[in-house]
Amino acid sequence: MVKKGKASISTLRITDALIGKVYHLEGALTMTDGMDITATFPKFFRVPAPVAVLLDKGTIHGRINLHDVYLQAPCLAICHPSDILEIIGHSDEVEGRSILLDPAFGAQLNLNDFELHQSIQAQSIIPLSEEAYTMESRSFDMLRDTLKQKDNPYQKDALIALLRAFYFNSGYYFHQMQEQQQASQTRDQQIVDQFMQLAHTHCRQERRLEFYASKLCLSCKYMTNLVSARTGKSAGQWIHEYVALEAKALLSSGMSAAAVADELHFPDPSTFGKFFRRQTGMTPAEYRKNN
Image 1 (cartoon, helix red, strand yellow):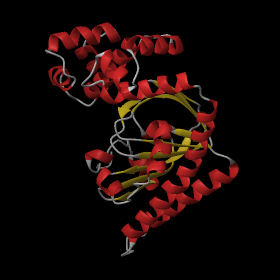
Image 2 (image 1 turned 90 degrees about the vertical axis):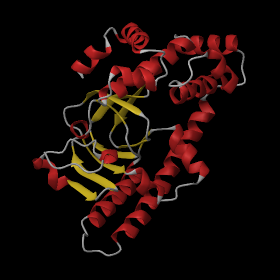
Image 3 (image 1 turned 180 degrees about the horizontal axis):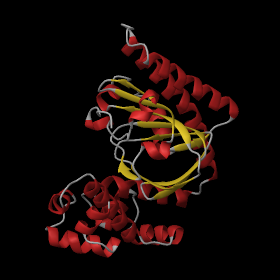
């Protein structure tokens, strides 16, 4: 195995055979080119830093924050820190390119445009037309070629400019997809989607239904009935599933059950252990051993 960089961008499982397909700006940016995406990333992990994936060949079935997603080439996926990803299945041949940014380096891009942020947050994956795929491919090629220029005194500045162009160009496609979805969504579905996002964001600290109903400016009864009718699961079940998902991610990162119990605001490890077993059928120790 090659030596890995900083923890924030050390997700890649890179062998010596693939080293020619990996490019670095040390401690700031890692890019892969022409690699099997399913072999590049773990089967289950929390995204440590902003990640963009351009899928060139094949299909992938996975989950992002408990939601099933299907990637079919050509498509673009952008995931955010704290997203929890799981690869469930994929076609025999899967090939793509990826960009991983260290958060501190990403901050230098100054991507503070509110509409851009909203569009990319609202939709993680978009299919690409032939024209859009050609444009995104060019962006990745230019980034790769610039990463090769180790003697370029302006390399970092050039990469920042190219990454800004990539994100703003990609934001256009995400904005189009968001508009299409909003046009077809009912108000009830929008509320359910908002609840899911809130549950993922706040489940570590809050398990009370009243908290989420207040955030949505709804009564608890209306919110729970709506979520249950739309998803087949109660709001409480979804909150517990998000808590269990967080617990899995923390246990997979190497944290002890006691530390996870504290992180997720359980009164003690025993209470956490009983909760985890109810949700997963395994004790925290069994889960860590199996994963």
